[in-house]
Image (cartoon, rainbow, N blue to C red; front, side, top):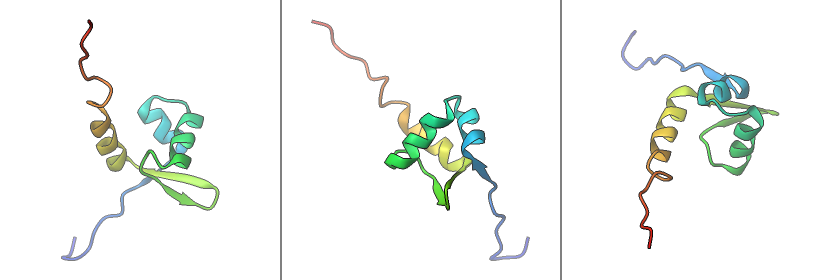
Length: 71
C-alpha cells in the first residue's frame, strides 16, 4: 500500500452487526435510531463498522457491572 492510501473497512449490515453482538436486529436498529451505537445511515439502511462496534462494547463493559452496596 502506498503512503497516504488506506484500506476501506467493510461495513456490516444491521443483520451482520446484530449477529456479531448477539442481539436481535430490531434492538440494534432501535439503538441506532437513538444514537446509542456508532453507525452510518445510508438511505433506509443502517451500516456498522466492526471496529467501532468493538470499541463501543468495551466502553459499555464497566457501565452495568459496577458493584453495589447492600444495606
